Length: 488
Ligand code: HEC
Ligand code: HEC
Image 1 (tube, protein in one colour):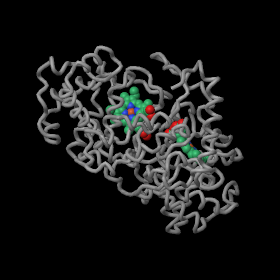
Image 2 (cartoon, rainbow, N blue to C red; image 1 turned 135 degrees about the vertical axis):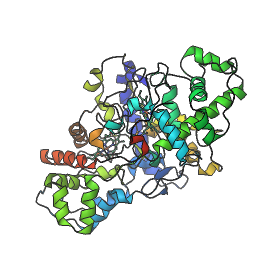
Image 3 (cartoon, rainbow, N blue to C red; image 1 turned 120 degrees about the vertical axis):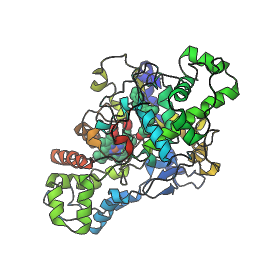
Image 4 (cartoon, protein in one colour; image 1 turned 90 degrees about the vertical axis):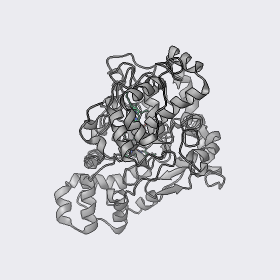
């Protein structure tokens, strides 16, 4: 993070240097065979041979396909019917094309129903916080498709990023908008220790589990360690911002720290098991595409207005959205700089009331995320991972990308567009309040990225694109969406 005060000098420097490096990299190294294979593609179901740093300069197969979309597609209004090529593209986007998620080698309990049941309780338990008022559901609310409706989230303090949905995250190789976690379970441990989210500490949570969840825990993970010696296991201790808790943690012998870490990791694994089945269910879009593929023009006309259909044509054609928002979850799950930060500060941020705002800063995104995930004690290669073979850990291949982080400045993970109408405000910093604003942003284009040229959309096309995106909303699967259970 770079403080605001230095922004004016730095934005120029950063913009230029990252552009130059990017250009150089694209020209000289783009197809280098030494480049690590570190991106999983959810649609394909296996790793794609693509290094992170090259994402901006490579055309995806979908993009090539879109160049053959009939030129009459966007804006013609009267256009009816879809070409075979277009149908093939639509098919890649429909929910029926979503495979089952890849197993998580680092979490042996990812598909364990008992772990999911425990994880669901933990997700809603507000006692898992320093003030007894914050749970995961505080910021990931069911009724807002697992977001919170705020530009920046409110936990015990204000976060520095907007809360994304958790829908479909079992398909994402990297967690958080900067990819600083490599699994859903390791992700869940972050907010629990963040000073502005749950604000608590590892031993606090371990004691809470001992007192309230012991039988459920033991049925999954085996005997719960004896934490009754308060000298060895203080009520508040962990590697956190809080000085007292940190000092208490540093005093604990490594062996006792490890005992706590294992309980903490298991909490994450249970929460991850609850999140894993949270996937989108059939939206209007999927019904429409099924009808297109079946040649059922009656249903097509019934479920889609002409504007929504025209918007879909813009999406796969003139709008160039398939450069990044691909597959049934509408994300390639890789990292891109789309120029969001050229607009800070913004009205949404100023409008926040309540707790003090975090220091506004340029967020360097993936450039910092790479180092963080490599250093994370809870990553797939760490002591608390269940992965038997380090080669199964994508974070291993990431080591080779470390030297390339200069090309990753201000890159964020492409967000899913499923249920997008429900998850405003938008972007990592929540600066865009409406889908209309998002479309304006893409229409202007961002020079720093060859995948985001100015689009030259008409007023009508912009409205159609928004109308289309609203057809991506639908119900959500997974027990987390069912009624909240009583806390033990
Ligand atoms: C105070 C609000 C807040 C709380 C509480 C909170 N989150 Fe989040 N969550 C966020 C924000 C903000 C982000 C984005 C942060 C980032 O990318 O750096 C996020 C990101 C995530 C992501 C990553 C999604 C993605 O697309 O990468 C998941 C999954 C998630 N949270 C799950 C949880 C779980 C599980 C808990 C409880 C253990 C939790 N969150 C608690 C605000 C919150
Ligand atoms: C170069 C890749 C790329 C292209 C092309 C692209 N996007 Fe995005 N999109 C992203 C990334 C990355 C983010 C997240 C940025 C952030 O959080 O700052 C995003 C975010 C969004 C969001 C906000 C999601 C949220 O939950 O906050 C919407 C809506 C969106 N894009 C729609 C579109 C549409 C519509 C198009 C085509 C006009 C498009 N995108 C083209 C990469 C891309």
